[in-house]
Each structure stands twice: as structure tokens, then as C-alpha cells.
Length: 165
Image (tube, rainbow, N blue to C red):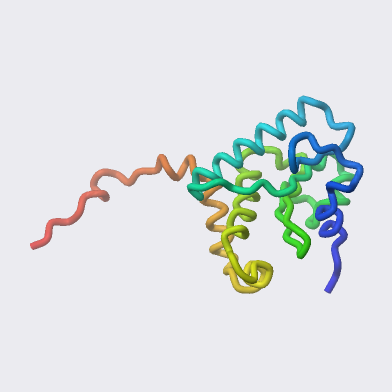
């Protein structure tokens, strides 16, 4: 089994040469303030969207924003991805690439962590080997599309119950 250094780099991000712009939100020390403010706003909106979906507070894991290809190479496991949730025996964290800085993508990744937090025993084994991918991705996709799904309504003809004879 191949080992990916992104597991360790992300797990110990608090001890790296990163700047913590808000609790658990880490960026490169030279990131401009406008981008840092945008990141903070996107994370706050994604957290609120998840809290509305799960109907309870959602923990905020470590979030690492990769503002350069060099940084992405260090923290992202799958090259070219917009964002990803990484679960290790140490912790879980979300890595956001420059192309993933939007509420839908961050909401989706935060939903993976929220689902993981709701599995009480043997989390690592269950999430890795037992939880069907369709369920995990489906729940996270529902959070991502929550606003659109809440406004979806069937046409009136389909909402009426048939008369029993």
C-alpha cells in the first residue's frame, strides 16, 4: 500500500509554516487579506449550510487552503482536485485548492466530516470499509445542493393523493 505524505502534512498543519487566519483555518503566510477574508466567509457559509442540513452544530475540522501549486502538491492527495476531506488516525481535515473556493464545494467536504462525526464507534473502519460510497457521497451532495433541493416542488397533479374507491 502506497503512503501519501498529504496524510501527515495535513494532520500536523498546525505545526507547519502556515498562518492560522481563524481557529482551524490555515493558509500560506503570504496569502493576501482579500483571499483570506473570502475563505473565511465561504467556510462560515458552508458551516451554516451543514448545520441547517444536520439540524445541529457541526464541528469545524482543520481547513488548509492551498494558494499555490507547490502548496497543493504538499497537502492534496489527488492531483487536480478542487477540495478533499482527508481522514487519518490522527485527525480529519479538509484541503481546499484555489479552484475549490466556493460554498458548494466546501459544504460538500464539510458534510463528509459531519457524517464521520455522527458515526460513534469504529469510525475509521466503518467509513473506510463499510459505509457505501453512494450513501456517503449522496448525503454530501444533498448538503451541497440543499438550497436547490428545498425549492423543488412536484407539479400539483403529482402531489394529489389518488381517491380510493
